[in-house]
Length: 283
Ligand SMILES: [Zn+2]
Image (cartoon, rainbow, N blue to C red):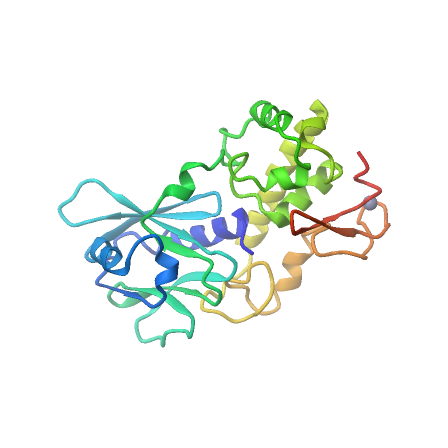
């Protein structure tokens, strides 16, 4: 499932490709992914609009567009869900089986495909309104982060998934950051010491920045291919292991901890897997 780094890597790939491209046709193959918009209004809003830019916010893409003769840009929100891919392809490329929305851009087409249809491409921006600070920006302050944790009785791992606390951290990087900061995932958020808050703040930024750096070096095969891998949306064949080596605890249950060699454990918290080292993350 894509988290902030995967979305950032894809955004960086798409950023130079989109500006100036005008939408000449809109095909909604799966109405579910444009909810709560209806297909007719969605098509009407996008027809004739030109892409002006793309920014990432949390795990969301914010595509900036402008209609002809209108000054004010508007935003199209994209989210990859669990299995979404968004990419440009030549017009002659046959549509994939799970194409959800296709935008005709002239010689090229923007394809959003999704085998499970949990992603979104919509004009509704409600979901970004409640997002917390961007973890890699100056808006993310250790002080405010600590104050928010103080007010929560939830286990720290579960609290980290709260997108209003910090945007874009998901299941993978929550486990990774807690390992880096040597904090037990079951510990109540409110009980973290000042030092632990600082360590966790630093660790969150470090794991995300490293993953972006690493992902940026992987050649993306955007139109499909490899079934697995975290860069599932476009991992070149053979590059998968390269990325997975970066993960120190996630999906490594039973394998030796890279610090102490004791086995990594998997537990379930709020119906999601958590991976940690019970020895290195005792406190
Ligand atoms: Zn360990």
